Image (tube, rainbow, N blue to C red; front, side, top):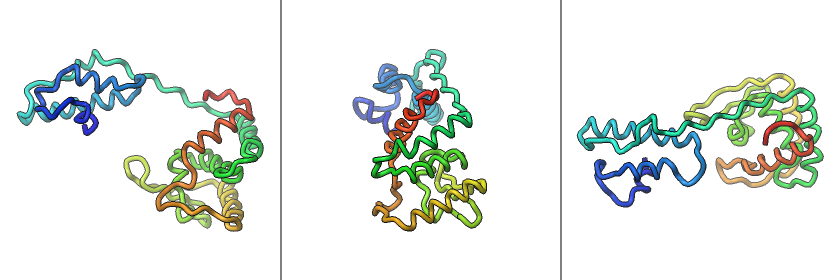
Length: 205
């Protein structure tokens, strides 16, 4: 709603907002995404409330059946064992001269994503205090819908995390800002692209 209020030319009452202004806000500046449906739903809910409380007499939203269909989601890609083997083997080559995201860290990150099923943002915000190596449990904090959860990890991944923690304890670490991830999502995307190109995987980019 804050973004919608900024998009309106001036501070006006609810009934003064035109359908053209609403369409311009819904359309945005980029290609059609699911975000449009979210904006439409938020505005529809707002105007239902405004009309029920007497703040508005009508809704300036276009009819729901006039709204474009949401773009279809890309089907998840399931890696074969051979592709996974190639991906992990390519880490040492693709990250050979990396500075911020070295091959050891990148391999461990991929193992966490694959073995624990975490989202990229969840894995990036893990700290050592979130990793219980004795009980092989990860604590994922303030994730989707601001909830935290415990994620048990298989023994093979637990062994890999213990080995990484041991290696990590013997090398200098960068000073980080509070609550800031050690590796940015952009670095992950760059590393993933480089790794994929090395394996010549068929996975869609």
